[in-house]
View 1: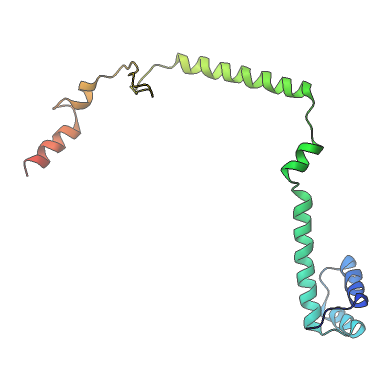
View 2: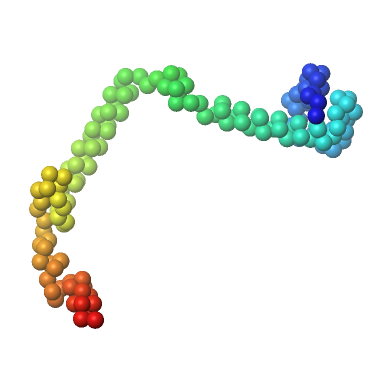
Length: 140
């Protein structure tokens, strides 16, 4: 494999700007004018289209650093967003406090929270499927 000359690359790039998918006849003409094989030209166009897609993706998705530098948010907008977030959080907390407590849990400190359910509801012999299944499994 020999690298393409600058003149060959210029001819291919020039054609690529006008048409990224050359027909069979156009490939034959390019092959004649550039003195490259048709297969070589097909491969070059395939690779060049892939490179163009990659470049388009990089341009459409800038890095986080670029976004933070080019898209600075005015302080007034940031304040408004913070006030909105605080208001939303307060309304969610109010709604959560209005809900009845249904389950008991133990906090990280080990203190048990209040609950409307009792432990006896979980472990009484007649009311739990756990106790009836454990008594049947222990008799076997």
